[in-house]
Image (cartoon, rainbow, N blue to C red; front, side, top):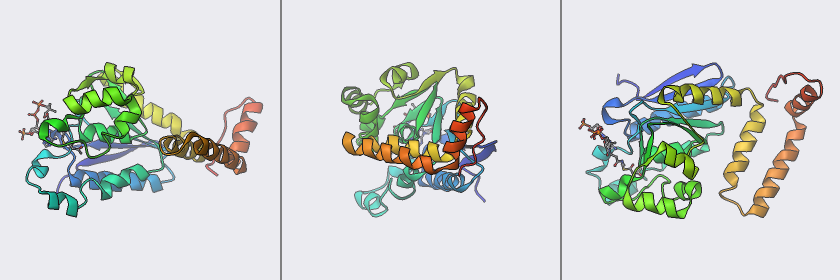
Length: 258
Ligand code: CAA
């Protein structure tokens, strides 16, 4: 049996996934992504899990797609397997929130994987970059799309065309990451944020995620209507009754996810 490339743990209601391919700085092979997709789908289906944290090592969240594997592939090889489709593409269909806890390198596919998560908590030593241009290719897992939406055209062009890495501080200024913390705090910070999310009503959490993601795909008019209809729909849940009753009665809500 081969060793797992993704470590799977539960911390209370938080699912914790750790990329574990240290010798290749967590390079994302198809095998790593297949394991990640399987673990994420299992957490998505697990009523005991309210949010997920995805992390790597102190040195690397992930240094990109697996260059060793790609180096010999032809156009037919990548097209015929629809490389970066399938399991890779399926990651964005996970409904529960995923927080990326990023320390060290998040490069190429690693930066793209972090951006596919719902938000990023970065360690002070984190470095983000899209260095594909140095390999004679371009980002292929969302780098030319999500990066622009996250930090705007000028900075995205700078990163993608020059291949330069940016620091955690620059990434926070640009809006790529939500928080920057000391490296020894990054995992706890992400797990605590995930536990806080997991304490809410799962329906409002998942609807909020869907609505925010729609903001990238819909005209404002349609997005506002989508948000308002979901807002209305939440009035049919027990958790809306409980959340508002608890506020009025000055107590903590007990959500049942119904
Ligand atoms: N794929 C495969 N192996 C990788 C890798 C990758 N993306 N990144 C690092 N490794 C391997 C190295 O080959 C090395 O293996 P060996 O010890 O067997 O030689 C090991 O990890 C350690 O790496 P380094 O010795 O290079 O470590 P370093 O500290 O000197 O440098 C680094 C670190 C700057 C991150 C450097 O490893 C690097 O530049 N990596 C490649 C980054 C990159 O180009 N990523 C984009 C990939 S393409 C892509 O992701 C396409 C897409 O959009 C999906």
